[in-house]
Image (cartoon, rainbow, N blue to C red; front, side, top):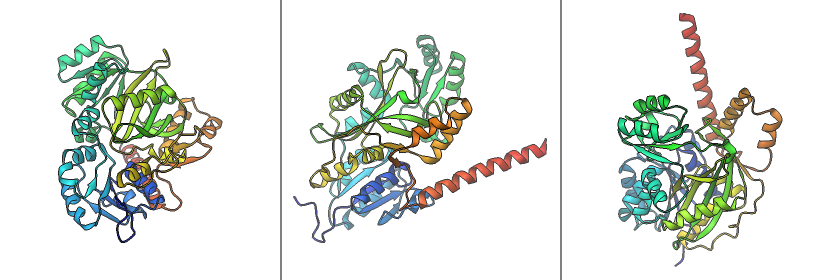
Amino acid sequence: MSSIHTNGRRPYAIVIGLDHINGIQTARILARHNVPIIAVASDPDHHCCRTNVCERIIFADKTTEDLIEALEELGPTMGQKAVLFPCEDTSVLLVSRHRQRLQSWYHIVLPEPDVVETLMNKVQLYKYADANGFPIPATRFVRTRDDAESAAEDLTFPLAVKPPISAIPEWEENSQVKAYKVATPADFLALYEQACSWADELIVQEWVEGTDDNLFSCNCYLDGDSEPVATFVARKLRQWPPIAGDSCLGVECRDDEVLRESIRLLQAASHRGLGYVEIKRDERTGKYYILEPNIGRPTGRSAIAEAGGVELLYTMYCDAVGLPLPKDLVQSYGNAKWISLRKDMQSALYHWREGDLTMRDWWHTVRGKKAYALFSWSDPKPFLGDLGRALKILLNADERQKRNYRKI
């Protein structure tokens, strides 16, 4: 079956979530391969919507069925099936749950619905991993105060506390971090009293000790037979916010155990499509623990695979529409890096103030071939918009501090 329409154009890639770092990176990567892009975003004023790589941007609420209705309206206008790239967990779940309404107009590269639900819900995922012998930290699922007190007695501190799925509106409204590290039972129970209203259930795990560079990830693409077509292993160098934030600087690396356990987990669940598994090595014991997978979507670190010569997202596009797969599918284990400039500067400043990062160390970590999270010479407006927004927040905070000082 030909993947090229009679007008000579390739099928569109529909990037759902342009107003998110995953979305802007996905759009730029595919545009570099001459794939035409239509994007979907919720926020017309978001700095990433200033990009110049999209032919068209559609605005719809990505968190509700409004997204599905927008895709249904778009579908018949394109003349050939497009490839969906949902870039956030909520979009993956919506597309998966409504796939029958969309499959006439779109290539939906996802595993079966039950696999999506299992791998995206951390409660189900940890139960599945524990039952099938995958290495996870000691874990409890907390729904009540009694559950919290029992977890405080049974588990060894410090603990990590996080929601069952990544995109819970109440959690995002109340917290800027995806997980908390608590050092004592008193701290944990105090946090529980706050966070129990943000999610129906909380996941509590023993903290895996180690610095940022003990955090590894495997980005991959698995075909319809759950066979790995492209894989890429990297590790964090810094994250922001510190302790339990998102990567702001990473470097490719070779770690065969990370690769093996990531593929073993995804294959055991009969996954297909894009996959990402985060694994941490305990610096005390050297043991590796699976922290969480992300499936069905690009991640913030997908671009590091491109920098390292593995065309991960384009592989998915080609496989979906029937084009020959790219030649660059094997990681060469060089020194490619991925950096979020603004956030890494914040992280580096924090570690410099803490006394565990020197200017020489900083330069050593950032030099070399890099993929940028947001910065682009050819598409500068998203980065400049984000920088302007951050400066505005900083100035407003400074002005509030001055006003409060004058009141004293």
